[in-house]
Length: 81
Image (cartoon, rainbow, N blue to C red; front, side):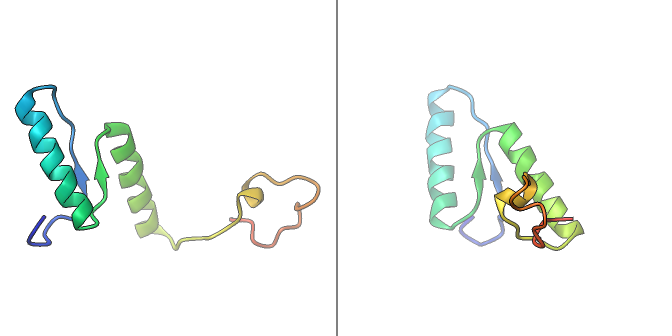
């Protein structure tokens, strides 16, 4: 982390005292270096899928309403494809 060689941290822990101490140190270092930090496999999986998706296509910014159109914004030109 200190050398800038880590871009993402996935840290699952056990309940031992040493694991809790190590986890705190890892979390602190990740936050200090602005590195994404995940403790749940489900969250880490979602993050990895999002990263993979961004590599495959450009980011499309759209309003939340464009994903759930109703009669008012059914003609929304910003609706993602």
